[in-house]
Image (cartoon, rainbow, N blue to C red; front, top):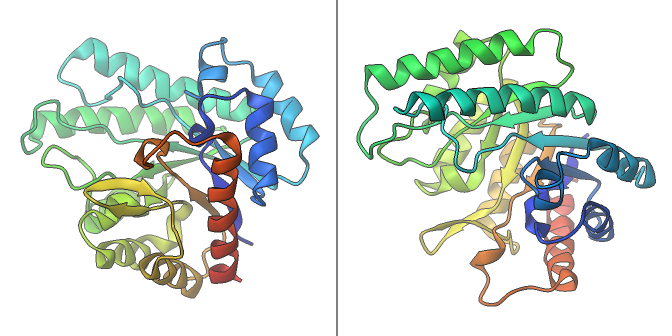
Length: 273
């Protein structure tokens, strides 16, 4: 059964208990907890507080985790940046286990220069994958790689490339970012689903609009078609709203953010029902 979720960074300015309360009030029944959520990240990762909130909110059927990505790039040409980025991804696996998360989403990295990736970049990517493969042994959380927007220096931004990676790495799963895919076209998002649905465990759902990613769904027909495709392929993982609050015309209050999520949650439930 599909779980209806949101990325915790939509409420980045609030405390962990507040975030759980706000998400619950919106009608969602799951959460993607970003480790870089400030109240968690800047206080030495208090996993006990997150676990206590989960006990307080038994209505949450799932917790997924997003690994750190800010300032990081596992494929960086700078070996120090690459090393700490890979180490951070491995540590996030341990944290996901402590939180009882079902899925850990990771990013693939990118070529540092805004040029087409070359052999050296893919060698660094292969090293990153090999380290994750070893770290995944015995870890209860599933590791899912996310597709990136089709930028010139992106290492993983087409359905065919993601399918190739999944075929090469049978232990690895897939997080589809719909807005990243739709920055090329709606058809691209549907092709990701058609090619990779057998390994799809998390979907970041939001709109691409005005040249920017991660707008609310707002009952948009393209989002309905994406969810219809997911339903046709019997998707049963998390459907995770990933909304950038800076895309709004003004700073939203907590109540306004809850209202946005409530509307999108109702739409998702109708589409997936």
